Amino acid sequence: MEIRIRAAGESDVGRVRRSNEDAFGFDLDRGLFVVCDGVGGSHAGEVASRTAVDTILGRFHNAASFNGGSELHRAIQVANRSIYNAAEREPAYDGMCSTIVSAHFDGQRMWIAHVGDSRAYLLRGQSLLRLTDDHSALSQFLREGRRKAGREELQHLDSILTQALGTSDFVIPEVVTVEVKLGDCFLFASDGITKSLSNSEMLSMMIASSSPEQACHQLIIAANHAGGHDNATCIIVEID
Image (cartoon, rainbow, N blue to C red; front, side):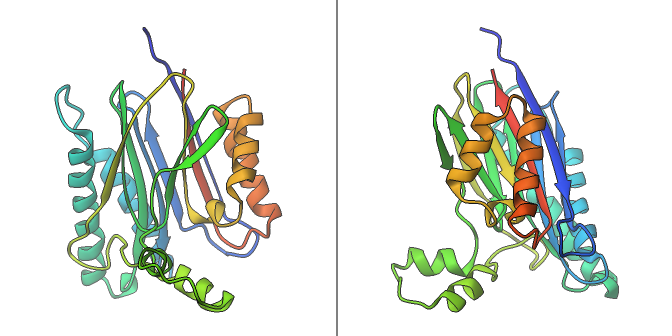
């Protein structure tokens, strides 16, 4: 059975930010996909996110008999070290960091590795399943079973990352694997989309779209209509 993958990506600055610190890239021939969300002043966030994307695309080795999760883990460590070292050398880059969600399709499985709060979702049938758990103070708060907090406190916790590329010389990416089925559709996105739109809103737009390009564009438009408070970036991957 021949499996075909189609993919598209789009990024937008939004309606509030002056610059776009998100970055994305993919290589269909290698089944490799990356979305990053940079943080840092003086355009350093853009440097961090682009460094991460370029490192994954450049350092990921595509061999026939390897564990895609381990290879993504290795490439993410290289990206982290590159960002961390650049911030150490250049005062203008001090404090820069980036989230990352990256994936590799090996023909049977989708390997997904992430650091931070950029997310991966799977559209299968009529359901949209979230595949990643944010590395944030809010996620940690909820995992610990705590629930009582005011809205402002929850928003503050959600803004604090517990892991990001470049904040230390070592990170621990989380890796998940999905056995792919024909008809599956994957979404990789920065929080400018995932925290602006509900699960049901993203689901309805993805189902209604006729192509990955249309799905990406509709998600970006909807995020801007929801206020466009952040840069918005996504990659859609269809398996058919």
